[in-house]
Image 1: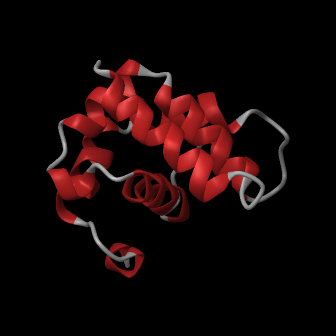
Image 2: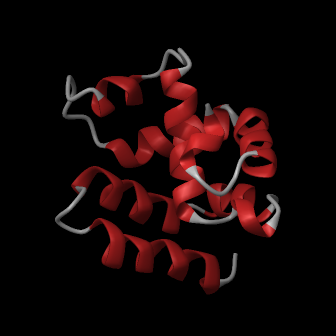
Length: 112
């Protein structure tokens, strides 16, 4: 995977997450270092490749009832490392994630 997509995720963590959201900071850094998730994002149309779109897609799946340990982290009920859990959601739900990245982008309310 080229350094460009990984750099985008690291830059997003540096500029948009940081102290504001340590959870998303950790997730973005995990995505930046995972070639399989970066390839998944690369398979989406350009407007679906933004970090905020993948973050929203995974959150949407969890809110829709996906039974996964990441849901407990998001709910503040678990101190597990969210990075590997997020990667797992993306890879085990690849088809659903790619569908969301391909059809639901732009504003987060598009995921309703």
